[in-house]
Amino acid sequence: MPRIIFHLDMDAFYAAIEQRDNPDLRGKPVIVGSPPTQRGVVCASSYEARKFGVRSAMPSVTAGRLCPKGIFVPPRMSHYRQESARIMEILAQTGARIEPMSIDEAYLEFSEVPGSQADDELIPSAVKLARFIKQNILKQRQLTATIGIAPNKLLAKLASDFQKPDGLTLVPERDKVLFLRPLSVRAIHGVGQVTEQILNGAGLKTVGDLQDYSGDLRSLVGSFGATLKRYAFGDDDRILETGGEAKSISSEETFDQDTGDKRILRDCLRAQALEISTELKEKGLGAHTVQVKIRYSDFTTLTRQITVEDPITGGEEIFRLGCFLLAREKLANRPVRLLGLGASGFGEPTARQLRLNLPL
Image 1: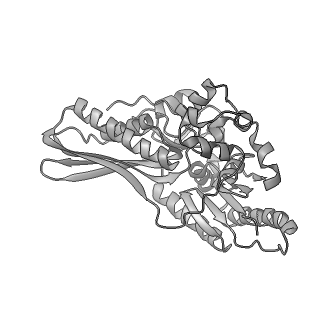
Image 2 (image 1 turned 90 degrees about the vertical axis):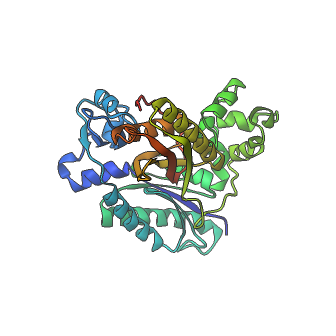
Image 3 (image 1 turned 60 degrees about the vertical axis):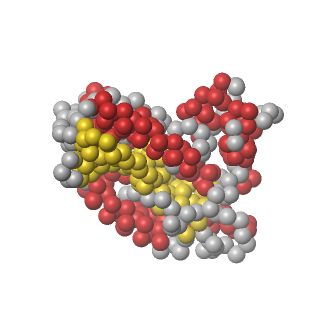
């Protein structure tokens, strides 16, 4: 039987939960995060707030300026995790193999699709099953989800980005090349800002340009060239990772002498962020959670973390969130023996790049 992959993405998950739990917030621009009067960042935003340009990991003061009528709500991460667990239970009842990508998204693969006895029945049965999953989530949790259906992970993820919120998009095998042609090269899994700039510089701006390119992509993007060409035609043989994958990526530095020099701490944090970012990009991952770890001369050890709704992968983004955590918690106000930075809560990165201005 041909592979059938679903990619399920909950719609504006944190903000939608807040709107569900508080009817007064429904239809209003909800911003989950610190208020603009305090040093903080946006963890998530409702679709009403996104219309004003509000996005995850944006400084709260910027969000307040973009969306003056935005309603800021403090995050309730334990509540969101509980909600995520209930949704994963609904997915598990389908009998699918499940790869949770983050708190609000997952891949599902079916060894068989209920109601299909032959290949020509497979697609209508898959669409019916996807609708059933969406209806169950709406009925049981009063939340909406968007699902993409395709023969592989690459296409299923892209399909789930269409028709949000509460969408359902099917990309059958026969249509995959045409589906991909108009998309930006940045839409392809593994293409980040630098790779996009290189491709654009060679006149390759859409996936269709990649499909039509007669040269060797390796001359532009190195060893990624062959994979990029396959992805451009919608070919992806990645399997679902249902267990044993890395849960976090981190880097630590123990100083020869305890230091409170903020320049040294910033340089260390920036190097760690670059190291983490490089590994994330090599694995084609983005991180929802950034954590700092600090140890003082008396060996007291503290960790603090922040979770944003949209996965990030850039070193500058990770660095700025790390700086924000140190500043918010006043962790660098005495000499430091060890400084660590980590990323977790993995998902596939978005194409969007953030510009943050948060001082240490």
